Length: 207
Image (cartoon, rainbow, N blue to C red):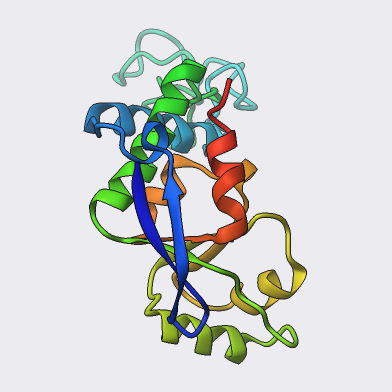
C-alpha cells in the first residue's frame, strides 16, 4: 500500500494517508485507457449531422428535356447529384457513435488512471480547502500555493463555495467521486484528492 503525505491548503504537512494498492497501484495498460477514453468521447458526440438525399430535395419531378435530339446529355431530373442544387450521394446521416465497454473494463481503466497519477508523482492529498466566501481570487491564491496549474480536484461532495470559486480558473476542474471519469483524470496533469474524498473513491471499487 502507498503512503502519501497530506497537505493543508498552505502546503504544510498535515499527516499521512494510506491508499489502497488495488486501486492506486494497478499496472497501467495504455490500450485499455485508450479504449475507455474513446468510448467516453464517442458517447458525447451528438451524431445529428445529415444531408438531403434525392428523397428529401424538393423539385426535380419533371424531366428537364426530352431524351434524344437536343444534343445535350441525357437527364431525368434537375435534382440529380451532378446538378447544382441537387441532392447529395452517400452523405452523413444521423447515427449513434457510442459503443459498449464492459463495466469491469471501465472500472479497471479508472484504477489505471488513478495509478498513473500516483506513479508520476502528480497526485496530491489535501486536508481540505476552506474559503470564507465564494471568490475566484481566494481560490486562485490557494491553487497558487499548492502549485496547481492544470489540475482535477476531487471533493467528497458538492460544495457551492468551491464550485463558484474555481469555475472561472483555466485548467482547474472540480468534481466528486461519483462523477470521476478516466478522460477527466488523463486530461489534467495533476490530481488533487481532498482528504474526505479518498474513502469514497476507493469505495467505488469495493464489491
